[in-house]
Length: 206
Image (tube, rainbow, N blue to C red):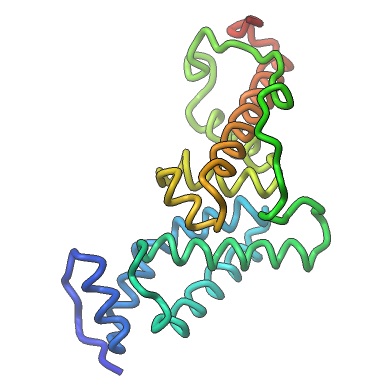
């Protein structure tokens, strides 16, 4: 197997070389995306050891089935799909969460999700340190159901488009939009209740 150094910016060219057996090319793909895949797996599994397993298993499967990657989507989108499936398998094996299916039907009607939520009238960074605020946010994200965590991480943290997230999760675009909306509402509500418990007066109900 070739392992010659690779200095290519075009992802398509890197994937092409990886498919030809260039180990350095595949290592470059791993280097580019391993942190994002690990973060996604950690958010879904909420277990560092499981997330590390998911990362390894996902790239191993990607390597073994690289010949099946047609290049019609981004390589990252393809790996995300593998990683999400691996992470959900971890959850199913643990049997600790009954809401792990990404095929679950979700009503998109606004009357089913509408609720009174707090308005953020001041920047929380004015009240909390960056490190503390980051810890609060991570904890709130981890409190979301897995089906919402995956969508939220891909859209609002990794910056994928709705269409890319839908492709990665094998969902329809409306389903991604619905789950993202619910994730944002739940996250906002969790953060609001947290800050109110801390006696923060920077929030006032609309």
